[in-house]
Amino acid sequence: GFYKDEGLEARKVVVRTNLQVAALIAGELDYSTVSGIIARASIQGLPVKGVMGWFDRPLHILIARPGFKRLTDFKGKKIGVSSIGSAPHIILREALAQAGMNPDRDVTTLAIGGSGERLAALTAGTVDATPLDVAYVEKAEKLGLVSVLYFGDVVQTRLGGFGVSLDKIKRNPAQITRTIKATLRGVRFIRDNKPETLAIMRDYLHVSAEGAAKVHDFAMRSLNVDGSVAK
Image 1: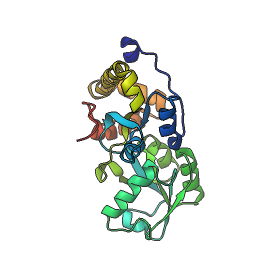
Image 2: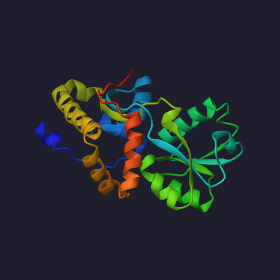
Image 3: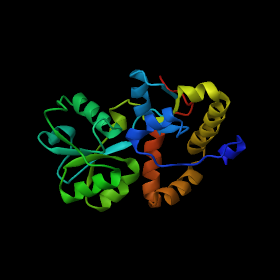
């Protein structure tokens, strides 16, 4: 694979979003992919930094119970997010503000948990809508839910990328460079090899060919192929 070509042995681990900054600083995690959280931590003065980006815009869609067609329809309604201050919460607030709504007064925001938990809460009627990754669109539609808004069309927050600790930048800049190089090859593979990418998406996301094509189309609208962190 691309990482092995660079002499790297990559291992994917699942770490709760709100713990990733602390894990980077403690040296328990080499790279975080939650770039929005890393950017805010860096602004607050914590010793972390974004070193690469691969999506210019969020790959999230506002999924709702039937009957909703636009953001302003949610005035007085309940919207679920993973946690307060999380990426789904941030992009939701931005979108509501752009629609002329007050995110603190016009909707009730509930911290529900991960994507699967939010989807369950939506089908149970606990919330009226929730931002979900585009990979969940096909599953949501099969449950009779509706897509109201692609956040990438209205929010410019960059959410996908690598964050590292300042200590790692000092100790091992060469490894970071190789990691970025390998990842850029993967990003450009997505752009340049659609048939192979769709086959990988079908297997990895457990979606149909049509569902994979939808995810790919959304990804192309947000993909950043030069790896830059800021515009």
